[in-house]
Structure formats: C-alpha cells, structure tokens
View (cartoon, rainbow, N blue to C red):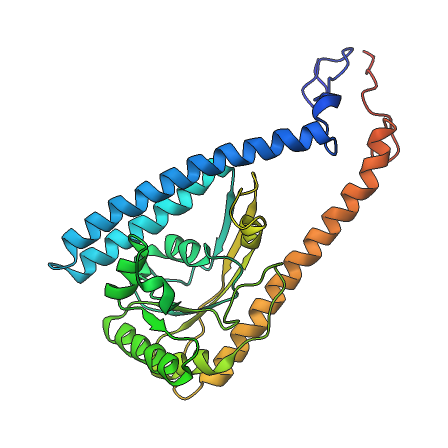
Length: 311
C-alpha cells in the first residue's frame, strides 16, 4: 500500500538533502551559485550575440523586398531571445486576454523594468508586429536591434529634445494605425531598478494614443524582469521568474486618450499590487516554515519524516 505521497506504508519518506558545504547562506554555497550564474551567463551571451548577427543578416536580405517579411524576421528574433533566456533558468509566465486578436494592431501600454521588456512583449505578441519608442543611442552598432529600430517603423527619440520626441512618437502611431500593426510605449520613461512602479509621464503616451486613435489599447504588466539586471547583466541570476499579463483590449471612442491612459495605468497598478501581495504572502509562509523545518516539524505542527506504520 502507498501513502498519498506515493511512499510505501511502513517506509520512511526521504526528503531531499543539501550538503552542509553548499547550504544556502554558506560562503562556499554562494560561490558555487555565483560560478554557475557566470558560466550560464557566458553561454547565454554567446548565443545572444550569434542570434543578433544571424537575424541581422536575414533582416538585411529580406527588407528590400518585403516590409512584412522583415517584420516576421524581427518577430522570430524576439521569440528566439526569449527562448535563449532558458539557458539561465529564466521562467516566463504569461497571461493573455482571449480577446486579443492575432494579426491586428493595438496600442500597448506597459510598465518598464528591464531592457528585455520589449523582447518579452514582442515575443509574446509577435503576430501583432509591435513597434517601439527607443533612445537615439540604440540606432547604431547593435546588430539586428539597431537595424530594426531604423527600418522597422519605430520611433527613435532624443530625450533632450521634447518636441522631436513627441513628433517621432506621433509619426510612429499614425503609420502603425495605417498599417494595422501595434505600438508599445512605457509611460514611466525609464526602467524601474527595483520593480516599483515609477510615475507615469503622460505627454508622450497621450500623443501616441491621439495619433493612433483607432487602435484599441492593451494594458500590460511585467514583474521580475528587473532581477535579470540585478548585477547589470554580469551575471544573470539563475532561475529568475518573470510574470507578464496582457489585459483585455480597451476600445477607443475617439478623443479619449487621457481617459484610456488613466484606465490602463489603474489596471497596471492594480496588477502589480496584486502580484506584490501574493509575493508578500508567500514570503510570510516561508518565513514561518523555516524554523519549523529546522526543528523537524511542518507548518501545522506535525512531525516531518516520521515513518508511517502499516495498520
């Protein structure tokens, strides 16, 4: 006979054991984890760089003949980069509204935590061909990325020139609406270094929504991606959990940019707050469990590893 856990009755279930030499919190254990992180980060960066080079060549070959073909190449790149993060044990959990349709344009409003955020959004909504707002420093010298920013219908802005930035965002919005492709903007302006939401800068986002006033708005929330850059990419921590949620599209009613942006902001704030509450609850459970497990008891007070007798 078996217990509910699958252990034969009368036998003691063996819990996984961790050597004291590499236990959490010991200097040796920390060194081993850091070495693992470095080795896997090096492998990831090699694969990352090779992918950028290969897709740059493919993009240059396709772009003179087909804009949609070029967009498909860049979409494949973004999906590839998301997959490559598995080398570092990164887990990406995605929740997507069933109301989001493939092959049509949307205006996507999202919080911003990492330079990988555009990759996550583009990789998950690859059939919607999202366009981005990017600082002008990225327009050169980065294979595939710079190519896509220059040729892919994105907005390249000078952060020191507000008028130029707004004009570029408006142009991107109008062109995207004409072609029925998507646009992405991060109203915080720059990425959060600790996962906390920053104040929304509304001017650029409202200008985009006014220019693309027929594109439904998808609110998007991302959490955990900031941890990938905890050590400025060197190394990438192993096993980072990323959560992404795409909400229901918000239909447009014409001159409603400020109202729709406000609704998207409230949705993002609520989603991130819910995730934080879940994290805090889990942390409390783990904190309560730690001393009990150390004493050989479960959270409900029963003994752990006690052999069960056949009755």
